[in-house]
Image 1 (cartoon, rainbow over the protein chains, first blue to last red):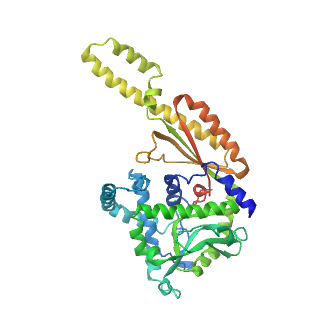
Image 2 (cartoon, rainbow over the protein chains, first blue to last red):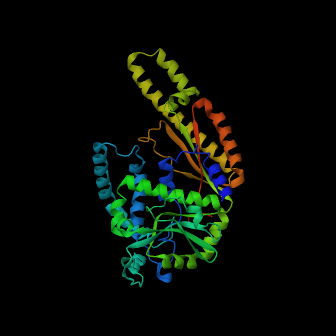
Image 3 (cartoon, each protein chain N blue to C red):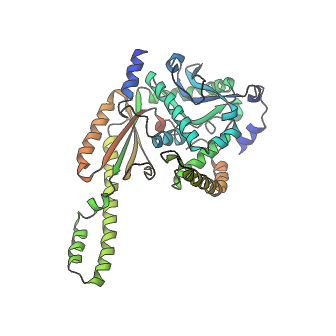
Length: 115
Length: 286
């Protein structure tokens, strides 16, 4: 375990021990990595994801990013109520704008492998 | 749509409604490499729920039980719209995988893979054992390093006037009558912007090529929008590089060389990581 601790310490060095920038984390965690919903043959193995809908939402987040609406990259986090309100409005607009596109995305991407 | 409809309609003996809990999967590691003790002090996506290691054959999933009141389909739909919640959980997801990386290879899942129970996760591992093993082998002993190049705000002014055309326009401007000045000014602005854009592309391409040359695999992501982050400037390159763990220093040395090379232009290079190989495990990536 001590060698693992050592490796952890070594692994922290590039980021100077600071938690990684949120944008870097979100970019990876939400946009990269394996997506299981499209990755397994659900009907064959009888595995059910609780959150197929989540994938659509994450896909929406990706689309939002494409549109340049990086609401999660705002920092600091909505300290003022004004910023919060503004954010809520933007999310509403975003949802409206993406509703139709999201359906299209679901048709195109849901049952097929990722990327 | 076919798959979704099927899943929704499919009855299942171990419905999550029974327990009020689901099983959240962070990623997959080779069986036997990660012990639960590794995650003893690590906070997962749900408070007071340990990170557990669920083995099946040659692979093991890193999982946490999660309350459906927070992670169930409906609840999640709402939570996902709360950026603070999403930020916290995404960090937790990333943290667990980074700790797993310290113990060995890891294939990260995208945020939000929530199963109804451990049985379903085991079924997934059973069905994909060979595929996951191959992916683990591909990333074994390797880590992902992020490198971002950021140009200063005055970058267009710094680089846009260096070539012949803007200099000629400037010279012409100096002695031009007022009416002509306006036109020349407009023209100069356009030339400066065009020149700066060309330099931007060149720096991004050259930097990426230099770093990709020392990487096992490399990819370029869309530059992040820095507005609202408190950081100044414009991102030119947002690259990810898969490198052998013991050759990280080589990549960093190449970044140093790029820093020196572009210091005059004020270009900054940020190195992040090592990350689990998020950018190098997607389907068809190899």
